[in-house]
Image 1 (spheres, rainbow, N blue to C red):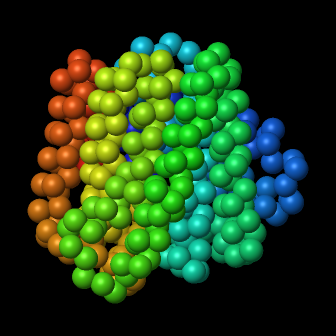
Image 2 (cartoon, rainbow, N blue to C red):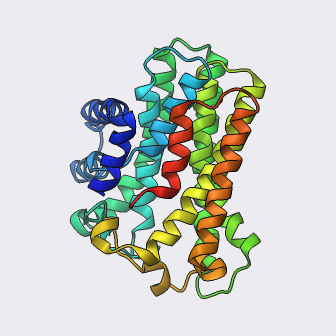
Amino acid sequence: MSNAVGALDDVSFGADRAAVQAALASFCATHLDDLPPVAAEAIRYSLMGEGKRIRAILLLAAYRAAGGRGDASALAASVEVVHAYSLVHDDLPCMDDDDLRRGRPTVHRVFGVAAATAAGLAMVPLAARCSMEAAVRLELPDTVCGTILRELMRAAGGGGMIGGQLLDLEGETKALSLVELERIHRAKTGALVTASVRIGGIAALGATRVVDALDRYGAAVGLAFQIADDVLGVTATTDQLGKTAGRDLELQKSTYPALLGVEGAVARATALVDEACDALDREHLLTPALAALARFSVSRPS
């Protein structure tokens, strides 16, 4: 995990990571007091662990590309709250039943299944609150604040991460087609990545064509990111990943390397990155930051 974080720092995203980390710390300091202590500690543990913060950094890069000039780090942090919730629930015994995440024990191994489940549930409305407060601080119109909230909750819901997770569980032990696999991961992984860049464009008050181009970029990068995850799952070690290597194989899940081979999966991910960059280039929105993030999504070591 530290290698991946270092790679992001190497392409000049260290300041953004630090700003998002500070926003998450502020979020924990101000919004967890009303929760049962064990749930609050579980949330703090899940949010403050080392992470790439790539979704948040994508939001910030999209915001700037679309003309945003304010400090959107708190808005970017709200995306990370949703992402962290998904990891907490993804690791539960009734889901993927994993013991390791980001190089340390998973939330339910530290705090218990009940506390981890409750913490994950609490994080969704907390993310909604975080996003609304951040949008208001950016002095965005009420209608735009509402649009941002809808984008975030749609990505987290039945048509996004939750629906994708359900399809993923139903697909275990089954031989899925490439079309079926991509349907799962465009929702489970891709929805929040896409929402991140869309929210960045919306927060910058970008025109419809700008947000549409960012949508195409995000959809392609999100799928490429998942393909890279599948490849790393069969080529990297547990120490490199910060989570249990080979877990998809144990759970008998269909993966891109299983369907396409490792080289074929890498080729598919690379083509998606090219597609993502082309979508922005056609609208003169491709910044060095967004290009670097797209390439990092498939070249990262964890």
